[in-house]
Length: 275
Length: 297
Image 1 (cartoon, rainbow over the protein chains, first blue to last red):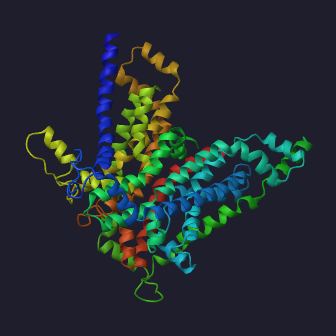
Image 2: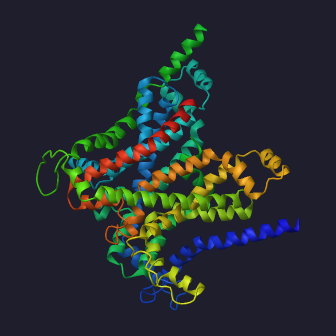
Image 3: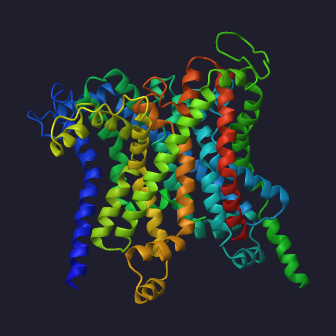
């Protein structure tokens, strides 16, 4: 028994030491965002000799145009995620039930989208010819195309578990396809929809690659991540400001994570755990 | 019997194809169509300095081979992938073993280890750039542990910076991988563990003979996800090294972005199509298995 206890204690000592690997970067990021520019030239873990909190964050919010980019991120992430959920749930309603060759082929093509990288060069130029490059609509449409495969995969898997008898009963009661979808299937799919929604929100909010191609031309439409990238390019010597920007960009997701930890873990690991 | 079949026909009518049309249309136009076109543009001299383009046959691929870019970039991407996948999975496995039982303390540590995965890669990329600076946090911490001043240039080596960047990537995703291992371990029936313990199986015997064989599905998923994710890496490298020093950390996505930036669209799209085929070929067997799982459900 005593031996067991020593094992337990030493286990947690090791884990506590390992967790420093996570805590130190967070501490580093926060503490250096409170320093003056001179002191943050080489970011260190020491406390600031002169605390400069309000000034740093104010500068970043104003010069980094963070308010605007926050709302850009909100609009792009919100609209894309909602639309992805709408089209994916509707597609899953078909893919989860019908077994004909044509339907299966489409489902397989969507699965391909989970692993296959997109053709960004051609897509970008195509958006340009369509007049959609550097627009919210273009970005949102592109996100729907590239990020719907996994939600379709998750939701189709879930749709297959919805009992047919419930649908049959609704049909006998005279429900239309839309009626069955909205009143019978949708309420049952809520948990899977929540998971898929969280997945898309986090992926799109944090995405960097696609906006680099599609939105980089227009500063007014920068997402938070893009604004951070270009802010760093401009203020690369002022680490205190860059760090304040890092904090502000991370804050929205971090706050949500603290309050909705369980759902977020579930959402992010969705593709892995529930097929 | 007859009646039953009739109801099924009606149920098929209840799931008309047009429900899938919005997803199919957007996906076809913005994902599938560009890939198909890409098979054509890869064989052109399409660029931003001239209007129109000419088909140049295998010219782009000849160039990719002659300059060695295709080999160099593929090799770098594979080195990055192997390093990240191994580090991430080994550490995550042992963390999962330690934190597998649900308790307040364990849940706290799980959340802490998972936290990096919710924040943008770009954020961590910049942070690690300063931490790994010769006078940065890592070297000064090392200096306090070993005699002398450590002034190691982590991000300046042609030979090993790719491993450092892969390490940063693994750091970020270890908690994510750990969660999947924990879920897999929790699905092992308690009786099996108990029986093995009664049979006198030691700690490592338990890991080798019971735990690993029983979490194979979770392990497979973890390896697949980390391989696919690592082969597609962009953010971490773009932010930490921009492919440097020199071209030492250039991977598929950063090479393509760079070449696109130079206006060489046909050339960039030839590498793009190579990357699409390369990654799909690696992931295809896995993808078939995944789809079977849903269809059989």
